[in-house]
Image (cartoon, rainbow, N blue to C red; front, side, top):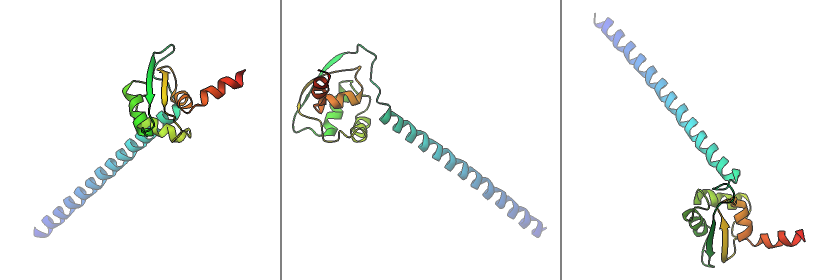
Length: 134
């Protein structure tokens, strides 16, 4: 009977290990799916360039001084409700090639502006676009 018990014990251990491996595999698959969803959502938010509000939106005054970094500016815009996330805005600065291009000054930005429109204005590109129309 001792041989029988050892065989049953060995079988139970094998079944337990198999169940553990299956559970671990399911956990890894779920984790990969979650990371993929997060990466997709984050990337979509970076490239979607969506405004916070529909037109006409609200005008908000923003002052940028020369000691502010892009991260500081992004924080100000998030705190004033002009962008959804400072982290996303910093990534958009890089994606839209405005990294380090924002100029000191006072700006009236609108909650219906897209982040790229705000970047263009704060980089001093709005005036040149207006003069091209003339």
